[in-house]
Length: 234
Image 1 (cartoon, rainbow, N blue to C red):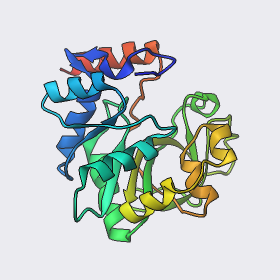
Image 2 (cartoon, rainbow, N blue to C red; image 1 turned 180 degrees about the horizontal axis):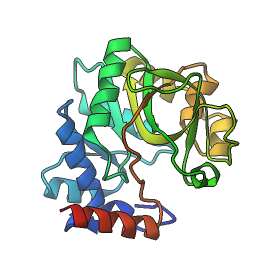
Image 3 (cartoon, rainbow, N blue to C red; image 1 turned 30 degrees about the vertical axis):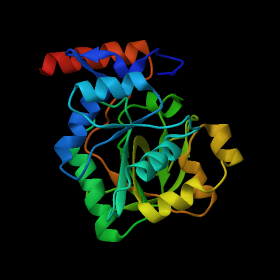
């Protein structure tokens, strides 16, 4: 609820449903497992439960991953190997991309995985609201490639495998616990990218190619644009 660029963002409505509840619906469509919202705000818990969702109230955290781990511990769910973390401001995430990531994590027995899509406009490279990921190899439809770096800064489009990072993570539970026990790194704080904590502590992050680039809702303009798209589709 404390997003500085767009007040009360998770509860803004599209088609009479809060943004966070649209994300819950997409998560349920994957059929992967239990869908739970982790939040520090009682208003979000109320909205989610009112719309047939499940939510866990957490303390205040510096990053989403730390919040996810607290919620996971509170739920006391046994026999869980992986946790998938979706961002609450991406109501247009494609469930098929989430399923693909989950399947690759299991197939390769990986610790942390995420998604990225091809960059179609050069303006993305200079947009600091859009996180870019550089990978060791070119992303193909069926491979899972190690990330070299993540950045918000302007990146030169020269001989690099640069992609639009999508804010979704899949964690092996044992690696998630290891991750949250590390202190935030200077690199992570400076760049405002929690995934750098993993790379700084030699935990590899593998990247799969997503079919689509969902627009995250960071500003009022983003909200208006996505609202128009989603209302038109419905």
